[in-house]
Image 1 (spheres, rainbow, N blue to C red):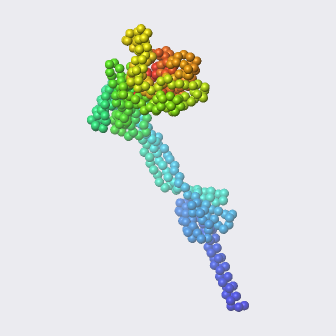
Image 2 (cartoon, rainbow, N blue to C red):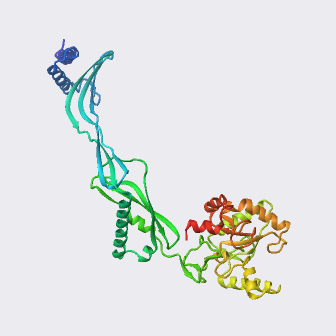
Length: 469
């Protein structure tokens, strides 16, 4: 045998010997680990648990190159697929509750019989564990280690009852309200006109028990209703109580001030003249006039109706949709009258006065009669640019003929869908004769709302109560 071949066999032998030694080391450590595990499963000795964990840790580090190890789940696998060992580590929390109690308190700043419940919380002990779970084939063993104990102090519920008389509370709230208003006036940040004609009409307390979950949290206990004489609207602001500071005040007074309004009309010779810059929802009628200079941004109807009459650009799209919808239903509308300026209304009113005088009435008598179907300048809805007189084809203005009545019946059933309502209806005390041809746009939402009450109140009353002008 040649020296070369002898050296080759010697090298193979040495390699096999090293492999056997390495495999023995792995098997030895496996047996050692399994022995430790068996002791852990059947023993409550904490030192054994530590011993086991130490061995697992060392096993990972020593045999990383020989074993397929998933550190995230502490999975140890041998070359033999029939055996697997897994160690899971998890955090566990257990509690031992202490139920809170209720304390009762009388508060001299809250009105009598007013109640407030400030909710506390239950307390108790919280035990934080680390749980070790060992899975091997179908067997499972677990062990918990107490890491820490937390104590959560219980907070009692606080039930507060007021003792202040209602009249004293009302006086106190009114004084606080007026002081806040004066502070805002003196700040110079607002137009003081908005603070004029304010009147506290009433304050209302919440009847149910108020609840809070934080001593420092403001609790709404009622509200003040405030009449804004400048624009015939009512607003309100919430009254709040803070349990921590034991104080009564108002919620967001800045927001309340932002709801206030400037004067929307001036009084002149027994009439109210609107000072609104957008008077779309102003209650134009017998007692409410528009400023002689008021004029909306207008647009011509030549686009679809073919006339040169104008309406407010605000209503154009809805008017066009209504016109086309009626046309699709076989109903053809003609717009007899649309926007009229103050001056145009003057000539219109004068014309009808002359018609009545031609019948033998005096000027004063003719004015009264004409004013039942034609408005005095400034008191006409046509000046808004949102109102039209609508007829059928081939009939005179206001004439009861089949063409007109076909249009009017269609409007009665459908106009509100496009935001239009009849201003002067049969049985209403509007000061004008019923006009089934006279329709005013107030928007789809309000038109639907008015449709439900039109037999109970006039459009002018509806808009006055609404107060959006």
